[in-house]
Structure formats: C-alpha cells, structure tokens
Length: 210
Picture 1 (cartoon, helix red, strand yellow):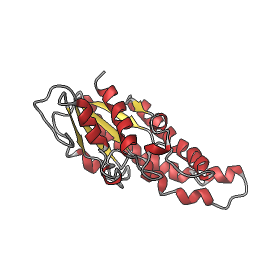
Picture 2: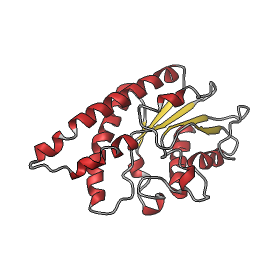
Picture 3: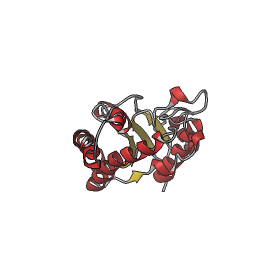
C-alpha cells in the first residue's frame, strides 16, 4: 500500500505536510517513500496520505492545508529546511568578529519565525477539532566536513525557533536529528533515502499509535 486512503480502516488517519523530508519519493531510487513505509507499517489498521510537496518553504505549506481530509486524525509537519537552505550563502560571509557573524542571521531568523508562526497558527483549528499534531525538526543532513559542522550550528538557530513555537502552541515535536544519524539515511546531502524514510515513518507510526 502506498499513498492511499481507506476511510473504512480502523486506526489513525495520518496526513503528511511540508517538504521533501516527507515527500521523498523522487529520491528513493525505487525504494518506498515515507508515506509508503507508513502505510506498510499501518498494514490496513489506519491510513496515511502525503500532501507534502518537495521544495516547499514554510510560507507555501498553508496551500497544502486545504486538501486535508475531514477524517484525518493526525497531521505531521516537516518544514523549515528549505527556508534555512536559502541562507546557505551567509556561512561564507566576510565578517571580522563573532558578533558580526551572529548579526547576519538576525533578519533571516526574524523572517523565518514570522513565516513559521503563521504556518503553525493555521494548524490550530485542526488541533481544536481533535486532530493530533506532530512537528518535525530539521535534521542535519549529510554534508562533508568541515561544512557539516557549520550546517549543524546554523540549523540549531532554525530548530530553536521550531521548538519555541511548538511549545507555545503545545504541539509535540519529532527530533529528526536523532533519527536520521547515518550516511545511509540520506539519498543526497538533504533528502532522506528509502532507509531514512523508513526510520521517519517508524517514528511517526509510534507516535500515532500510542
């Protein structure tokens, strides 16, 4: 079973929103995608549907909300990675002090916080009607060193905002940095492979079937 809804099935109805961390079919080289793994794990005792779109920014994700089925019981959001990647060039900024290095991130963080808060606020009506929310952090990817160390530091700024806002809205979080920890979890520096997608699906299923 792949990206198929079966309203007659018992168990959770899980909708995936966001970017290519959840919409990874194009990168798995024939292996199952996240939603396909998830439906296999559910094995007819629930369903999962992917509404996430590869390449989406947080400001675009609200467009996906209109397609959420009325019988969804769980929503999983993974967004922010593309927001962060658009500022990748700042890692090479010519600065003279640590203060200057931090200053270049002030405006990007302000923009991301506004976009991400707007997104989370639009999920609130679904939570209010009983849908359970799960918000994913941004994983660190599979970059070569020493660049990987720089990426981890920069992504921590974005993940801090994700954690802050999720706490404010009382949305539970799924820490992908603890899930996708091996090179084999990635199809390239930023997208999950089939095996990485399986780990993500297992974590989502564990949350949804508690």
